[in-house]
Image 1 (cartoon, rainbow, N blue to C red):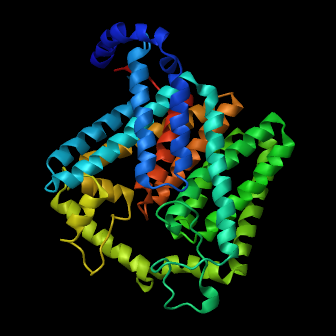
Image 2 (cartoon, rainbow, N blue to C red):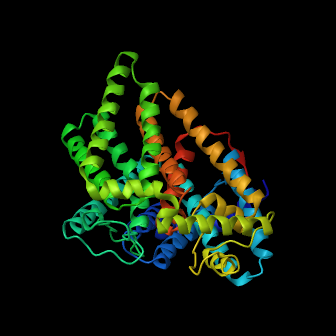
Image 3 (tube, helix red, strand yellow):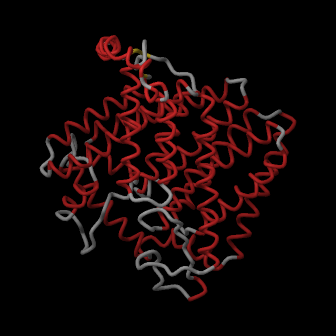
Length: 441
């Protein structure tokens, strides 16, 4: 109520300016352009450049709030959990021993959440444009798929540390593609593809529902290509997360489909599983890469992660309530006091453990509560809505989020801008199309 009261006073002063300014009349268009720039620059620009476009979209959204009559901010139950999470992050940053490094991490967090608010405000007034936004993500997925396919065809050289080849024969060494995302890294590429592939599936489903069979076939082909290229990244976290992510559309289909077709659906999924197993068996390098997941301490990358987990748990035990302060640079400096080997670590390689280490147990509880309320709200709407297009859009966003969250159990590329901006856009889409109880600020 206080925020909206202050906003109302400002609107009384600044609303008359709209009639005299062409830019102020076109704020929604400008915000959409900035959101589009964030999505497209994620493909090949450094993090700072992506962040600048996000900052501009935040500024334009605040400007829109001030000059639009009767504009009000509101929030849902899951957003209240986000506000509580942010409060603990602020307290943690204020009390961090490495305050300046933590302040930098805090600014990144504020940009991500501000971008989320910008997306929510835009979609609230422009729901139909969600198709354009999904189209931009689909374009990115197609572009990266083509790049990844070309990299695999040319057998790009791997950088050191991308794969433990000590116990592998030459034919078992996998060519790991990495796309164009900065920094060049196959795990980042695989995680990004995991996040945007559901959009390709969703758009293909929308085309099928609309009866556009020609473009639907094109969508199927690009979906298959994108999935294949994602596997070519060799990211083992993606190998684990993809089947879990696919449970979302499988569940929705099984619940929503006619009873007479459920048997056919089960047969199709069984056939897909058999084909996947066949591909794995046929590819020596892929088989070796997947089996390395179970090598545990026998694989240098997995062994390193176990060491990081142990050290991170000790960091959490020493700072259980407020953490060490948010930010990967802050984590890196503090980790040096706990590391079990001579190798540095950029993160905890688990987003939930990282949240607890950086901001404490209460921030972790708030973050998990946010996810529970968000996902439960999306599922309830999916099960009860009679609008099939809305169901497809929500299923697309939910699948993307579930994939990123499960992948985050074994990696922390989730905190990269390329993934963060996808994540918060998907949250904004669910916020816009799912039914939540709304409270005024």
